[in-house]
Length: 200
Length: 200
DNA sequence: GGGTGACTTTACACGGTGTCAACTTGACGG
DNA sequence: CCGTCAAGTTGACACCGTGTAAAGTCACCC
Image 1 (cartoon, rainbow over the protein chains, first blue to last red):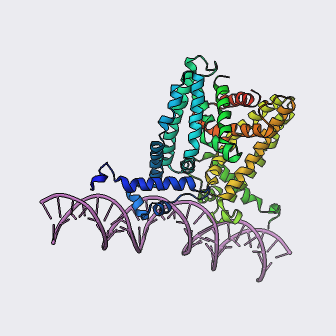
Image 2 (image 1 turned 180 degrees about the vertical axis):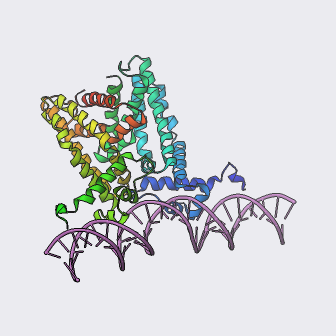
Image 3 (image 1 turned 120 degrees about the horizontal axis):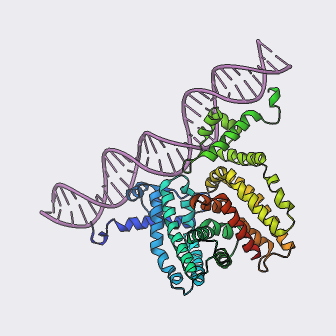
């Protein structure tokens, strides 16, 4: 094994596959799924070589989500919301941070959601990512509760459910792609809706 | 052709296929799509016979949606909302009627949504159904506007967009199946949210 | 009795995933 | 310089599900 390829797996080709898949996913027109052969061609290797690194399509997709999260560093994006002084400010910051993150992962999300119904692995990968978002929602809900700003008829769990549903990728897509909303219109609207839903 | 099978197409087997598909769709566990062979077996005919009536899977699914709408008669369900005296009452009635309709078409919706990304016909069938729902949303939004109850920062179109997104099947599924909400909790919550979102 | 329409059986092409085996190539260390 | 090991290559193939094609059966109706 060469000196520059010492970390666990061969990083070179592996990451080339990941970024190639990512690019294809973001560029892909709806209706034509990205195939293993496409990925291989884009990465400049044979189709079989892809299977050398990722046993199944679902595992590849799942790895891409992890890779993207790492590169785009969603954690640091949510730093602003964690630092907010009030629950309400935290909620607004979170809605904004997540809302602005969605467009960057939209292609991947679509591919994963399309596989969700037929592939347990894909479903797991997606659910895992969504669990992270839900955690952010829960943190915002807790902050509101500590301020005494949470609606009386909501507990933290229910509030989290609601916020997570409101901020789903499906809803984003429907409003932005189906109805042609601008991104900042979406964000402002969701900030208002979230505040009304949890504090109203 | 026998005397009892005179109306346009052979109705007997055709409707047996439709109802069989419907039943399977509602019963199907997520992750295992209903195949043409399954439909055939359930209808008690050969796989090819299904193709005798429906050229493609997408057309079958699309026909099932029409069939279900006919049988369940969504139109009459929305009668209550049309008859409501105020915009607000109309909104509540509509949310209730649609919210209670979703569970009955949920299996079909899942199948259609899964095909949406790969099949134009399926997408068209789904979009057509959703256009009908959107029309209901639009009617509610217009009623609110006439009462002068629509938020100042919303026009009817935007309000319709918002309401349609709020009442999406995806949101229903997430709350009911993902979070374990009861049906009436979902309906009451959505009634409140819709009112806040449009009149707030 | 012959025709017609609905259905059956068998067979097959296609596209995409995933598997397998045998071969090449390059870098490494003895 | 040789052996080996890892990473990739090529080509073939099994599996599944959709959709097509062709020939045969069966009932009913004129």
